[in-house]
Image (cartoon, rainbow, N blue to C red; front, top):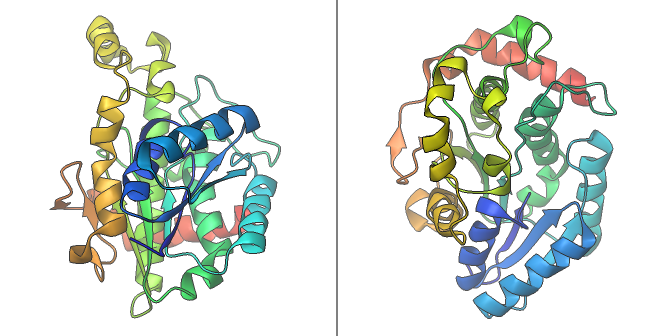
Length: 287
């Protein structure tokens, strides 16, 4: 990974931070994004110290807004000449339905529009790489179907179910994106990290869980108790693999599980007509 430039959204904590650490240890130049200057600088200093790699930078941006995404892309272009790996790691599981300044439901904005928009905004810099990779992190449960009438939880917001729904939509959009970059120097794939104790999972409340799952709330809390980043490091392995392994250098439009193995896409993702509808909607929303 030496001399390769990697951008990781949400890389100052959780799975993103552990991904940054692993890639920094491999010698990559790593740029992480965060929203807070102080906590971001603390994370970067920790990453430099532990990895022994001084080539770790911080870019600040609020990725829940389209202005924030455009600001991040502008900052990146001012400082770097190319992008070899983009890891769309940032995610959101809101506790209630809320709209961003763009009048978009917040889960949908961060989990769907941000990876779609940021990948487009940085496309020229990905094309400048001899071999570029875009890695997207899934989350929640991948079963179920995509409800076009409830994309932004207009009809119902159900905590983790809404989070899972937006992640499934992201998978469909990125599958479509991968079809559109075939036979180029860019590959686009999705991986499922698996369970991890992070700030996001520790912020989950019983009310955010499906009603049938609330019975196991005490067990869930035990599973996500602080563990010094161990579970996040384990969950980062599929991202690190897709970002760095020569084995997947030309693999495109593929879904990987938490063990870095190729698995079948969820059935909802394979609906071409619905994928194209989602593509048109995301294009319209991101202008």
